[in-house]
Length: 176
Image 1 (cartoon, rainbow, N blue to C red):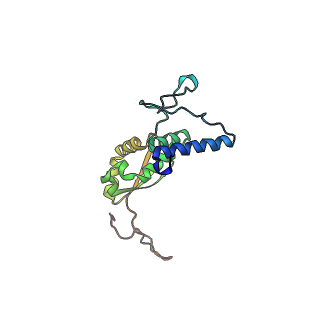
Image 2: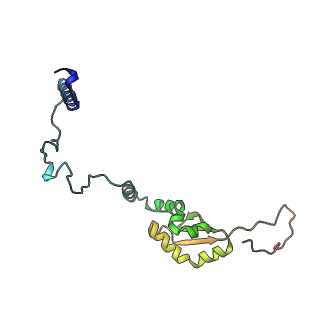
Image 3: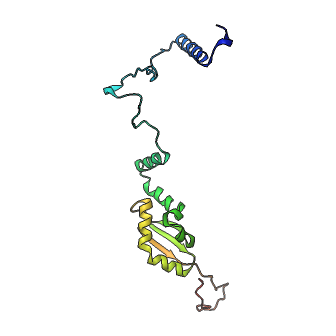
Protein backbone atom coordinates (compact mmCIF):
# COMPACT_ATOMS: atom_id res chain seq x y z
CA UNK A 1 0.00 0.00 0.00
CA UNK A 2 1.47 3.35 -1.02
CA UNK A 3 1.70 6.29 1.43
CA UNK A 4 -0.70 8.29 -0.78
CA UNK A 5 -3.47 5.70 -0.22
CA UNK A 6 -3.30 5.91 3.62
CA UNK A 7 -6.04 7.68 5.54
CA UNK A 8 -5.84 9.35 9.00
CA UNK A 9 -6.66 6.21 10.97
CA UNK A 10 -4.16 4.15 8.93
CA UNK A 11 -1.42 6.69 9.58
CA UNK A 12 -2.21 6.67 13.33
CA UNK A 13 -2.23 2.86 13.41
CA UNK A 14 1.14 2.70 11.64
CA UNK A 15 2.61 5.29 14.08
CA UNK A 16 1.32 3.24 17.04
CA UNK A 17 2.84 0.04 15.66
CA UNK A 18 6.18 1.79 15.14
CA UNK A 19 6.07 3.17 18.70
CA UNK A 20 5.32 -0.28 20.11
CA UNK A 21 8.16 -1.82 18.11
CA UNK A 22 10.56 0.86 19.36
CA UNK A 23 9.43 0.24 22.96
CA UNK A 24 9.93 -3.52 22.60
CA UNK A 25 13.39 -2.92 21.16
CA UNK A 26 14.20 -0.76 24.21
CA UNK A 27 13.16 -3.61 26.51
CA UNK A 28 9.92 -2.13 27.77
CA UNK A 29 6.69 -4.07 28.20
CA UNK A 30 4.06 -3.24 25.64
CA UNK A 31 0.30 -3.60 25.97
CA UNK A 32 0.19 -3.69 29.80
CA UNK A 33 -2.09 -0.63 30.17
CA UNK A 34 -5.84 -0.49 30.76
CA UNK A 35 -8.16 -1.79 28.08
CA UNK A 36 -9.77 0.85 25.93
CA UNK A 37 -13.43 1.70 26.64
CA UNK A 38 -13.93 1.59 22.87
CA UNK A 39 -13.17 -2.14 22.72
CA UNK A 40 -15.58 -2.93 25.54
CA UNK A 41 -12.90 -4.31 27.84
CA UNK A 42 -12.70 -2.76 31.29
CA UNK A 43 -10.04 -4.11 33.60
CA UNK A 44 -11.03 -4.28 37.24
CA UNK A 45 -8.97 -2.54 39.84
CA UNK A 46 -8.95 -3.60 43.47
CA UNK A 47 -12.30 -4.59 44.95
CA UNK A 48 -14.16 -4.21 41.67
CA UNK A 49 -13.80 -0.42 41.21
CA UNK A 50 -13.89 0.78 37.60
CA UNK A 51 -11.17 2.73 35.85
CA UNK A 52 -13.63 4.59 33.62
CA UNK A 53 -16.17 6.75 35.42
CA UNK A 54 -18.97 6.05 32.96
CA UNK A 55 -22.23 7.98 32.81
CA UNK A 56 -22.53 8.61 36.56
CA UNK A 57 -20.73 11.23 38.63
CA UNK A 58 -17.41 10.17 40.06
CA UNK A 59 -14.77 11.72 42.33
CA UNK A 60 -12.33 11.56 39.40
CA UNK A 61 -14.52 13.79 37.22
CA UNK A 62 -13.40 17.38 36.60
CA UNK A 63 -14.20 19.77 39.43
CA UNK A 64 -14.92 23.50 39.44
CA UNK A 65 -11.85 25.59 40.22
CA UNK A 66 -13.55 27.46 43.06
CA UNK A 67 -14.56 24.19 44.72
CA UNK A 68 -11.00 22.90 44.53
CA UNK A 69 -9.54 26.10 45.97
CA UNK A 70 -12.08 26.11 48.81
CA UNK A 71 -11.20 22.51 49.65
CA UNK A 72 -7.47 23.23 49.63
CA UNK A 73 -7.85 26.34 51.82
CA UNK A 74 -9.95 24.42 54.36
CA UNK A 75 -7.52 21.49 54.41
CA UNK A 76 -4.56 23.78 55.06
CA UNK A 77 -6.29 26.04 57.59
CA UNK A 78 -6.36 29.12 55.39
CA UNK A 79 -10.10 29.79 55.86
CA UNK A 80 -9.66 32.87 57.98
CA UNK A 81 -7.08 34.50 55.66
CA UNK A 82 -9.22 33.79 52.59
CA UNK A 83 -12.23 35.29 54.39
CA UNK A 84 -10.23 38.39 55.31
CA UNK A 85 -9.16 38.82 51.71
CA UNK A 86 -12.75 38.40 50.53
CA UNK A 87 -14.03 41.11 52.89
CA UNK A 88 -11.41 43.62 51.78
CA UNK A 89 -11.20 42.62 48.11
CA UNK A 90 -14.90 42.14 47.37
CA UNK A 91 -16.32 44.82 49.66
CA UNK A 92 -19.03 45.90 47.20
CA UNK A 93 -20.41 42.39 46.69
CA UNK A 94 -20.28 41.62 50.43
CA UNK A 95 -22.16 44.69 51.72
CA UNK A 96 -23.98 45.83 48.59
CA UNK A 97 -23.43 48.68 46.13
CA UNK A 98 -25.25 51.38 48.13
CA UNK A 99 -23.14 50.95 51.27
CA UNK A 100 -19.94 50.47 49.25
CA UNK A 101 -20.60 53.74 47.42
CA UNK A 102 -20.41 55.68 50.70
CA UNK A 103 -18.01 53.58 52.82
CA UNK A 104 -14.76 51.70 52.35
CA UNK A 105 -13.19 48.85 54.30
CA UNK A 106 -9.71 50.07 55.21
CA UNK A 107 -8.31 47.21 57.25
CA UNK A 108 -8.91 44.10 59.33
CA UNK A 109 -7.02 43.42 62.55
CA UNK A 110 -7.88 41.05 65.39
CA UNK A 111 -11.33 40.29 63.90
CA UNK A 112 -12.17 44.01 63.88
CA UNK A 113 -13.03 45.50 60.49
CA UNK A 114 -12.14 49.18 60.11
CA UNK A 115 -14.59 51.06 57.89
CA UNK A 116 -14.23 54.68 56.75
CA UNK A 117 -17.43 56.51 55.76
CA UNK A 118 -17.49 59.48 53.37
CA UNK A 119 -19.43 61.71 55.80
CA UNK A 120 -20.36 61.84 59.45
CA UNK A 121 -24.00 61.18 58.51
CA UNK A 122 -23.04 57.95 56.73
CA UNK A 123 -20.82 56.93 59.66
CA UNK A 124 -23.80 57.34 62.00
CA UNK A 125 -26.07 55.41 59.62
CA UNK A 126 -23.56 52.55 59.38
CA UNK A 127 -23.25 52.41 63.17
CA UNK A 128 -27.02 52.00 63.35
CA UNK A 129 -26.89 49.20 60.74
CA UNK A 130 -23.89 47.52 62.36
CA UNK A 131 -25.70 44.26 63.20
CA UNK A 132 -27.06 43.91 59.64
CA UNK A 133 -23.60 44.60 58.17
CA UNK A 134 -22.02 41.97 60.43
CA UNK A 135 -24.70 39.47 59.37
CA UNK A 136 -23.99 40.15 55.66
CA UNK A 137 -20.25 39.83 56.19
CA UNK A 138 -20.60 36.58 58.16
CA UNK A 139 -22.90 35.14 55.49
CA UNK A 140 -20.36 35.96 52.78
CA UNK A 141 -17.11 34.86 54.45
CA UNK A 142 -18.11 32.68 57.39
CA UNK A 143 -18.61 33.10 61.11
CA UNK A 144 -15.77 34.47 63.22
CA UNK A 145 -13.75 36.24 60.53
CA UNK A 146 -15.20 39.64 61.53
CA UNK A 147 -16.70 40.04 65.01
CA UNK A 148 -16.64 43.83 65.40
CA UNK A 149 -16.84 46.94 63.22
CA UNK A 150 -14.94 50.17 63.88
CA UNK A 151 -16.72 52.82 61.79
CA UNK A 152 -15.20 56.28 61.45
CA UNK A 153 -16.21 59.39 59.54
CA UNK A 154 -13.92 61.53 57.42
CA UNK A 155 -10.82 62.96 59.05
CA UNK A 156 -11.01 66.72 59.64
CA UNK A 157 -8.01 68.79 58.55
CA UNK A 158 -5.60 69.86 61.26
CA UNK A 159 -5.47 73.56 62.02
CA UNK A 160 -2.21 73.24 63.90
CA UNK A 161 0.69 74.23 61.67
CA UNK A 162 4.21 74.78 62.93
CA UNK A 163 5.73 74.96 66.39
CA UNK A 164 3.86 78.06 67.52
CA UNK A 165 0.22 77.09 67.37
CA UNK A 166 -2.35 78.70 69.64
CA UNK A 167 -4.12 76.34 72.01
CA UNK A 168 -7.84 75.90 71.45
CA UNK A 169 -10.24 74.03 69.23
CA UNK A 170 -9.95 76.14 66.09
CA UNK A 171 -12.82 76.90 63.73
CA UNK A 172 -16.13 75.19 64.45
CA UNK A 173 -17.31 73.09 61.51
CA UNK A 174 -18.45 69.48 61.15
CA UNK A 175 -16.48 68.76 57.96
CA UNK A 176 -18.93 66.41 56.49
